[in-house]
Length: 254
Image (cartoon, rainbow, N blue to C red; front, side):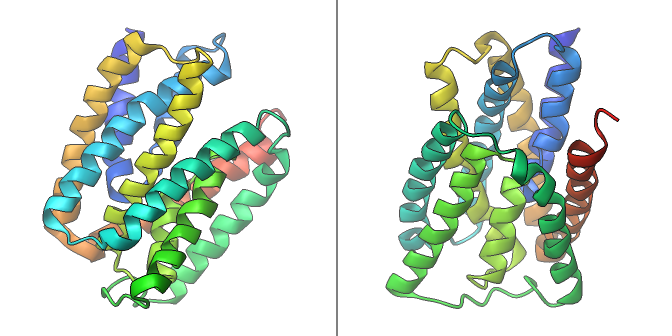
């Protein structure tokens, strides 16, 4: 029964993740509810094992339909992987507790800016080219990749927002690029959790299939309905992230 519920949660997480990120809102709490006595690192590792399958599948599928700037995103992906490893190492040395309380306010700013700028991300108008685009993409990959390794909630949504706001991508191109970067950061975390023995592979293999199926459905809808649909889902997911992270930071345990 636990495997069935975890797989259903993984499928829904893959669906959300494939559009704008935020699948951790669903799968991580589900794993903690199903296995309350398990070591948190094991649940995070198992979550990453399933998530990396869905994000990788979504990245491949988007690439078939959306023209991505590989000259910028490929170096950014490598930087993202290295940065996520560094963040994952740092979290073993210091606590990310201060980020927990700041995160809801950062997300409120992201949501407020997106709502205020009605045309934000509706048109694909890249702001940079050549070496400058590579450097800006690497800065995004490195900073959010480090954040993902160190803390994590909302990583996919931060990737989407920065690709839209900084690089000038529309929401569909930003979501496609975010899947590539998020695959790198998830893979880095999975490597670390694997080496420390914190992955339940017998769960991951089934949950990964469910995550891919959810990802297939999500990418299908995103590609079919385009930028406006992705923007709407982004607003909904960031709103949910604000509520969830605010609860975790200020209300949990009261």
